[in-house]
Length: 326
Image (tube, rainbow, N blue to C red):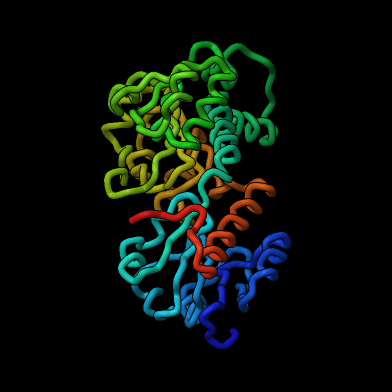
């Protein structure tokens, strides 16, 4: 690790080639972790010491301990994610540290993945693939892996009608789905153009064939979907979560999938990530992905570049392009 320098930027993961080229244009020194998956806690606490900027991942916990380790030189935390529940924004603000995120650049990729989960669960794609691979004899029959007809009047319920929620709605509109959503102050004209109806959460859960979660993780949304909400959804319904794992009570979801309270689920995020509830692993009617919602090559590059641009701006005494406000 280089000596402390007021302009040093530390990256908690191994950047892509494009991001590395951008880092080389910075006027101050840059240190980077060796692993693309990020650093363990002890390494990060050591390497952030004396840094003026930290570009980090959603798996990095930026709390008082880390801020103490960094010391008074730290001026900006650039989180390479839209969500920033891993960052103690209030603690950063109290120390005069700017926090930034990467909104906008990953909306389409995440909505693509969410809609892929919608289709995979509704049409039982993964179950059918596993069945064919098992080698069990089969022939066409009317009841073989029958699922939900997505484009024949199915209703999509979107919880969290922000940028990604609206991108999901555009895809649903192309499939002629009816779209309902929880109320949002930010959806505006586009929601009206897409014909989105707003409903309270309980009514949305009762109404929807597929519920897709796109809200941020906050104290109010932790376990937003639990046993009672799953009962409101009903048999045959589908839950998709590409937002944050703790929005769903994973134990309640596993029970609901096992006893037929709901039909299926598609999850890209988990309550205690990377651990997955063991009962979910044993169920055939859930599709489990390792948090790859934004995992398009161009998207990941744009995320890294925006995080670097945020750090560069703050170090230059300029406003950050995408600051997070306490």
